[in-house]
Amino acid sequence: MSKDRRLSVLRKIACFLAFGCVFAAGSLSAGAASLPNKTLVYCSEGSPAGFDAAQYTTSVEFSASAYTVYNRLVEFEHGGTKVEPGLAESWEISPDGLTYTFHLRHGVKFQTTSFFKPTREFNADDVMLTFERMFDPNHPFRKAYPVQLPYFTDMGLDKSIAKIEKLDPYTVRFTLNAVNAPFLQEIAMPFASILSAEYVEQLMKAGKASDINFYPVGTGPFIFRSYTKDATIRFDGNPDYWKPDVVQVGKLIFSIAVDPAVREQKLRQNECQVMSYPRPQDIAGLKSDPDLQLPSEVGFNLGYLAYNVTHKPLDNAQVRQALDMAINKKAIIDSVYQGAGQAATNPMPPTQWSYDKSLRDAPYDPDKAKALLAQAGFPDGFDITLWAMPVQRPYNPNARLMAEMIQADWAKVGVRAKITTYEWGEYIKRGHAGEHDAMLIGWTGDNGDPDNWLGVLLGCDAVNGSNFAKWCYKPFEELIQKGRTTTDIAERTKYYTQAQQLFKQQVPFTPIAHSTVYQPLRKNVTGFKIDPFGPTQFWYVGLK
Image 1 (spheres, rainbow, N blue to C red):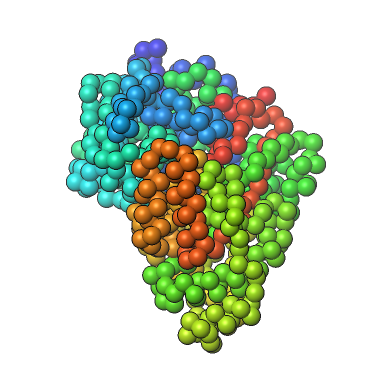
Image 2 (spheres, one colour):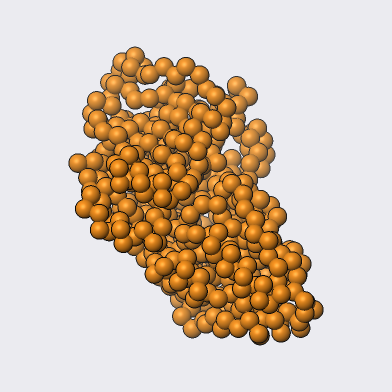
């Protein structure tokens, strides 16, 4: 199809309004005639803070960017955990495990929008731009648009990568300083979504580098059209997508509704065909509706309460132990999860390899907790802020109720908790900055490796990122680093088991629960698979 023909049918967008109101982009090309003339509406639970996947850590952003607009060098199979080719069609790993050579796919097109019209296909320059931006703090794009890149640093990739080289237009080589066992799994994650170097150059010349977060362009299955915060995100199916049969609808709309009751009502009325995170009390009714289907999976997730160890008295392990044993976890699971969750003991789910089955929770014991606080110098307790998430997450269906129950439990031992919350993007941002005392948060595994739990949630590299406990404990850190730098599974399991035992002694956070993930769909939705890592994907998803 000629470029002129494609451009001749692009819809005109009248204007762009500020981020937070509406972002608008180009729409379908003439090739869209080959896509089904159908619109799929997804009732999502929150507004993304932006579309630059490298700077975010939550599935709200990943569902709206990484798995719609973008691709990565390697990707996880649809609905699974196995790494398969993405924009790299093949790769080799050197015998010493230090060099990864990626051979890039030919013929992949970047999306054409009203604000960007590519003049070339995807190549090594795009890979170099994407990773050099994260790797080099002095990279011009990084300086023009300075943002935190939490995953890249949380996993220590800024230290483990020695250099990145373009060997030819379709070959890129990464050289590591030391063996990094989960490296392939890590670069399959959303943060490593490949940007267009040509588009970035255009933004830089215009002095609008930050527009990468507002107006995304990638090689993915859906083309961004517009975003009205707290209302809708609109995408068109990508008629030029390089992978056959992935795009099954002409249009994809995210209808944003924070209230799960509103999402459910819209689903039942067919105003949307897929919804996120039903309330536990609604599961039975959804199952009995003849117009709906309700697939489910045991969640690869963890809801927990992080203690900011940089704030007194939470720097005292005895205080953290007391707060932990003062929480009636069983009552929380009964009331908050209502049969759709199981008590958590470890800083990872039981389905994660290296999980230590021997660990046990300290028993719920308010009297002993009060005695521990007195020993620590707080016989009359203390005041604390307790942060509660404003949105449902797969690992926590009702953070407000959970916070209220913890508040009541702590009151019994003299600890006076003030419940605090913020809009979701602000909540995460302030949490990264360490403004909280205790914070309800959680995690859904990203890549199937234990390091994604222990390193990212508790490692020293992650104290300004997803380590919301701000806990950097040298004996624990040494074990994590040893686990990263060997590929022997038995050896890695030994290190991670020891690390879990140290975690249980020090209690930087209280594990609460692992939840079951339910995915309500209309009966006419086809091809949907629950992503074990949390984001909602629309690869191969269509309508009868």
